[in-house]
Length: 282
Image 1: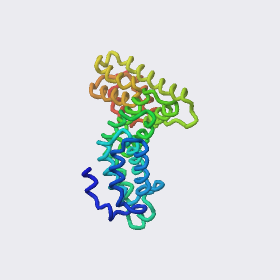
Image 2: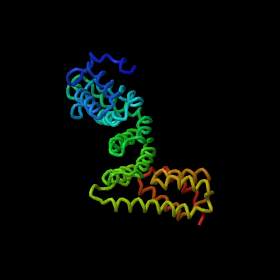
Image 3: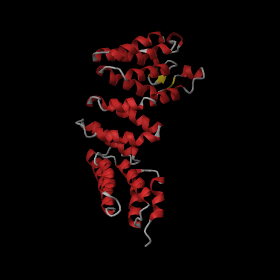
Image 4: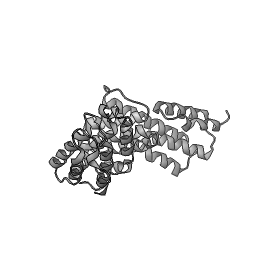
């Protein structure tokens, strides 16, 4: 893999010696069994991100793992994603801080963020038992780049439709709610979480019904296509965008409902604020 050749590994700081990292990364990329992938994973982890603390070699490692993700084996994919999460959420080791490398974690985080298209693509093919690794990394993406939040929300909603265990399903629901600004305490039951989402769905559909004389069939379908997989925030933003583009007269009651719904989901007020100027005259 050419990316490995870009760096002078022998000169890079790590927990012990970074010289063996190229071999470990290549072994991970090509591992054809879970055991081989696991062994290579720990060879990398124990050098560059020890107990969440990053060494200088972490940044080149992030670059190479991203390159490896595009050509890795099924056995290695989840391990690579897990390492990318560790690199994206680590903090500089004290020895790196002493050397002035205080921005190391930002470098790693930004580099991992560049892998977003590969992570989204590989999420679709992730085995259900490993989906939580992708979920953790996608949440990091949404925190680092707010423009990715709607896409992350859609993918989490799509994953929720898979046959996954109850714990992961609730984690997916909670993550989606957090992205919508409606975070749920850990102690809430799955039934309570489901009821909250059902209410959001019903409220959006009720607004669509009230706007049946304003929206055409294609516009209504566009919004519904986001409601059905549970992408309520995206559905809301799409609806507001359509209404804004149409410059249609909207009743004060519907404006009030949109305002309440947007605030409940924690969506930026700019999304619906301009619609207030389109109110029907009482």
